[in-house]
Each structure stands twice: as C-alpha cells, then as structure tokens.
Image (cartoon, helix red, strand yellow):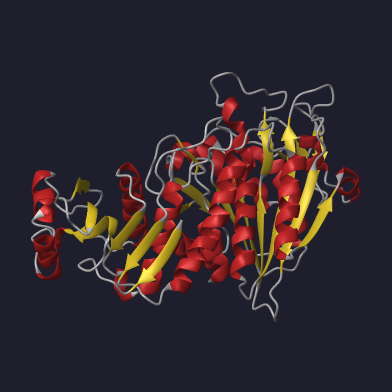
Length: 487
C-alpha cells in the first residue's frame, strides 16, 4: 500500500473512493463542499440525508456515485467536535474499512488539519489506515483474494512525506508486536523469539547480547530461572541495544515480560481461565522488540536498551513448587506462594540487570495481573511510578499515541501483606489491590534508576474490531514507547 501527500483537493481528485472527514458543523454544506456536491450531482447531500449522517464522532456512510463521475465511491466519516488527535486516527481507520468493503483500490482522504499541525495530521491518518487494514493471516491455508487498497492520497497535505515515512516505520514496529503476540506457543518460544530479535539486530546494526542459562546462573538470576526450570526449551535473556551515530542526549531502558506461554506452573490455570490465550503473556516482550524495530528505523539521538528474560512457565518433574524460596540477582529472597505469579519473578532479575546499566530512566511492561483488568477495563493500561517526571512523560506519550494509560498509586503499606516469615517477601499478596502489590513487588528490584511499570494485561488483545485495532493482538503500547523515547 502506497501513501502520497498531494496538493490536490477533494474537488479535483479522481479515483475509486473519495473519503471526507466532516465535523458536525460541516453537514450543512457550504463553500468547497457545496461545489463538490454540485460536481457529484448531489450525491454528497443525498448520502448525508439518506444515512441521517450528523457528523458525530463515529458516524460513517458510503455510496456509489453515478456513472460518468471521476469518483466511483463516496465515503463520509464524522469527527464530531473532537480535539483529540487519536480521533483522526480512528476516523482514518473507519475510512480504511469502508474502502475495503467498497472494493476501492485508490482512496483520497480529505481531512481537516488537526490544530494547524499538518505533520501530526498526516502521521495520524497513515497510522490509522495502515493499522486498520493489517490482518494476520499467516496461519490461514487460503490466500485473501479480496480487493486490496493499493494507493492512499492525503489530499491537501503536500510536503508531508516525512510524516508518512515516520508513520510507516512506527507501524512496522506495531505490526511486528502484533504478530509476535498473536503467534501460538508452538511458533513463538524462547528460541524462535530470540531468533527474531537476532534478525532485527542484523538488519539494523544493533548490538545484541544473549545470556544462556549458564550465564544467568553465574549472575544469580534465581527468580527468572525458577520460572524457567520446568520447560524443555531453554530460557534466553536478551539485551538489544540501539545507539545513535552521534552523542546520545539520554539513555533509556525498556524491559518487557517474555513468557511465551504460561501454564500457571503447578498452580495450573484451570479450563475456562484463559489458559488457551496464554500465548499473549509475552505481550511486553513483543511490544519491546516492536519498539526496537521502529526506533532502529527512526534513528533518534537516544540510546535505548531493550531487555527481556524469555522463558515458558510449564509443569514437569523439575517444576518450581509452591513454597519454594528463590534468590534474585540482587540477593533478595522470594517465597513462591503462587507459581502463576511468574511474570514478576522474571521481571525481578531483568529489572536488577537494567538498573545497573546507568540509564536515565527505565520502564517495564507486562501482561501482569487480572486485577488491573478488573480495575481499568479492556482498553486502559495501569501506570505506576514513584517518579513524577517519568510518570508525566509517559502520560504525555500516551496522550499523543491514543494508547490509554491511567496512573495508579504505589501504596507502600500494601506491601505488608507480601512479607514472608521465611524469606524477604512472597510473590503475591491478597486479592485486594492485586495490581498495586504486584507493582510494589517489582519496586523491590529497582535501586537507583527512575522507573515506571506498565500493566498491559488487557489492551494487548481485543476480541472485536475497535478503531484501528482488528480482532486479535493490538501491538499496545509500541507507539507510546516510541513517543517516550523521542520526547
């Protein structure tokens, strides 16, 4: 699919499908819209009337234009009175879906410029369109033979080729994350995920360090290895580094939970608990390496470390027992009272490792707790940080991307329920405030680096098409991570 930013207006454009983004006050046609309606023999006004289109956010309609017209199909999408850039993305996604339904190979999009910012407008339009039409059909036996959109023209946005290029680079990272998360555990495991990271490193000239099981043992990563010990597939601790060509203005670390499958261990997940979806438990690692692919192409003046402790949580005669005591690489001891709270154990050693790199700030992201889903629902991730500057930077990055975050409290007294008689701590507390106690557990493994934790358990997956996310893996929060790095 090719995107072009061109000077041509909606009145002059010719092609398969013309798409107009309209605000509520534009439904009463005037100016160029009235001229366009006249040129199309009243098709625009008829479509507005017959579909009862009011220009409200989410409204959309499409129709065929009469014979002899320079435009074959006309599509309209409402923006309401929105001031959110993400609504431009979502409107573009609606156009993408309409265009495919209407069998359009070429599409022209006429949209108002968001806050007089043509660059952000063009980038948002491309992101929405590109991501909406991405469908993961790798495991389908039949090829998709439906008509595909081939060319998208952004009308009146000439000179924004750079914004298009940026959007496509970011989308490539989102799509990588989607495909990693969506792949079943017999396709993506610690070995094959590491091979994917190796391919990224080779393609973009990034530094890569892979710690094997023996290397992790020498570093005292007992928490990570405790989770990994039941699997027949060996664990991999992966450290990928992007460095700019010149001096880096800051250094950051992104740490992603990398459980390629989570059975729950000896606290086995029962049928109906979602065990069949536990391929998504590497959503943090998927987004981490998706962000790495995007950032390697964008080439910012920022050094970024991408880290994941990758393994499976399985059951066997070697499995970690409830009641076992593990020693993490910072010397802290953990009584395992639930083998299904395994992600925080792998992250513990990954955070200790990242904390020693001397970066200016770091973030971990993980499909960590069902409690966060209960608290924030299906589309919002939780954000925890003891550092206001880091937290505000992530909230700003989230606002720009449209990937929703909500800052949650680090209520220190809640950690009392995690104290152990025989070890420094247990790996779970009570059900009450479960996502908070999980964040407090992770905090025990960060010594000096400004840090944030993202619990992304819900928004890495959607059970139905939603805006620019099609059913399945969403690639959340690759775009937020990129914005954070670029800020």
